[in-house]
Image (cartoon, rainbow, N blue to C red; front, side, top):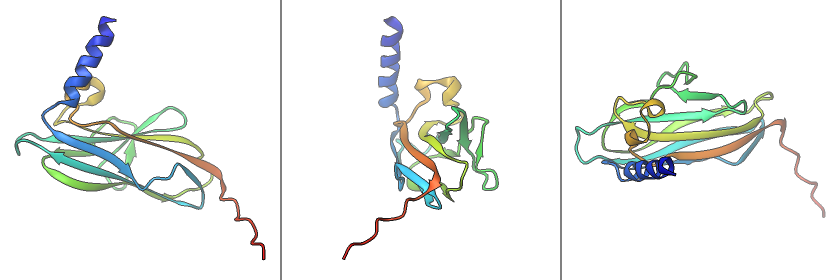
Length: 157
């Protein structure tokens, strides 16, 4: 019980942290079929009290296998299993980040969950925990199907 109360207290502190920040995913449907184009954008609104208070942006995806991949700043290797920040040393900004865009191909089927979070600059939210959180944890889920979109029903005269 004490552990639960402590966790709730820490979460409350994290929600009232220094940064006034909000993250949300946009442009994502709940279901995609083979051949459809998937686009995931992240809308960030970050208002820091000082230009010296900076944050890092972490973005991760949980795969159908339960494994996690982390968004990297490297275009040729956009995701990596190594925990890392996607963008570092951010101050005040209202910005869209393109997280993912590709055509769904067979073999990728399953449920995917995306997460995003602003974290105190230089900190790892997985090891340093809730006190480093500087925003809400944005989440969104989608399902990729291993089959093509069913054809529309025939029109009746």
